[in-house]
Picture 1 (tube, rainbow, N blue to C red):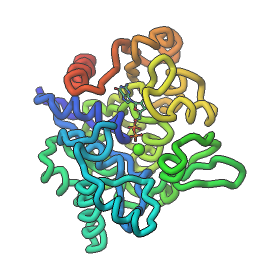
Picture 2 (spheres, rainbow, N blue to C red):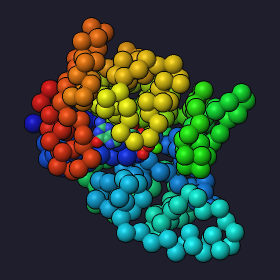
Picture 3 (cartoon, rainbow, N blue to C red):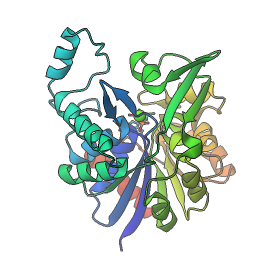
Amino acid sequence: MTANLVLLSGGVGGARLARGFEHLEEVRSTVVVNVGDDETIYGLHVSPDVDTVLYTLAGVEGPQGWGRAGDTMVLMDHLSKLGVDTRFRIGDADAAVNVYRTMRIRAGDQLDEITAALARTLGVRSRILPATNSRLRTEVRTGPGCWLPFQEYFVLRGHRDEVAELRYAGAESATASPGVVEAIRSADAVIIAPSNPPLSIWPILAVADIGAAMRDARRVMAVSPLFGGRALKGPADRVMSSLGLPPGNSGVLAAYDGLLHDLFIDSLDAGDAPSLEQAGVSVHVGSTLIAEEDRAVTFAGRMLEVL
Ligand code: GDP
Ligand code: CA
């Protein structure tokens, strides 16, 4: 029997789980990807999380999980000679994708159509949908009255600032991209990937019709991004704590406020299980390390077994 799944995903953590399902024949998966990180850089519309998912599913991702394997930096070298600030690194093949996206947006095409064309070209089997075609941008408050665009906080300042507050500019008027709500409504399960809850998943849930569809979803399962209470990479644990969420996986559960039926946590956090169970969620404990493809496929298989 074919399982119909929807994954909510940010960049690297989400892409790793999506790759597990991409390689399971018995699954039809739709990956709904965060666009709160999108930005105009070097005049180009970059969609970092969408591209990380596309590249990872196509097997062409870079060694850190983002960008493309073996990419050259000729464009960055020349821009830098012209005095342009090139701390946001975009390789040449990656830049070509962003030029293509920008050209099509200028021609009036929507992000979902452009993403579908890229997925076809890259040979990706899963359906990849940007959460919304509307303009939605994550902004980070790092001090009194100090709001930073997401990429300035994350890349240029290396996510070292304490996050006091988040907002998703444009979310109020954003609508889900075509197919997202229908996919959530008809899914056997919606899986929230082990992405950063406030920075990668909340901007998806902030789109009103996605948030509403999630509350009606048949089954919602999440995979924790925490190992021993800490993020494997990036600021998830620090951001959750500075936003007032409880520590460890109680924080992950609270971040998804009443949405979860199941939570997959790592063996390192087995001690979190009793209080989570008490809060009414089914907890599944085991290794959640899915950096390598074969582990991701095995893990995805484990998730299917509890369906
Ligand atoms: P970004 O958009 O590229 O920053 O990535 P995401 O928001 O999708 O994911 C970041 C999170 O992925 C981090 O909090 C990591 O802890 C988590 N992560 C990365 N690799 C793994 C993994 O193999 N297993 C699990 N469970 N989480 C992971
Ligand atoms: Ca991201």
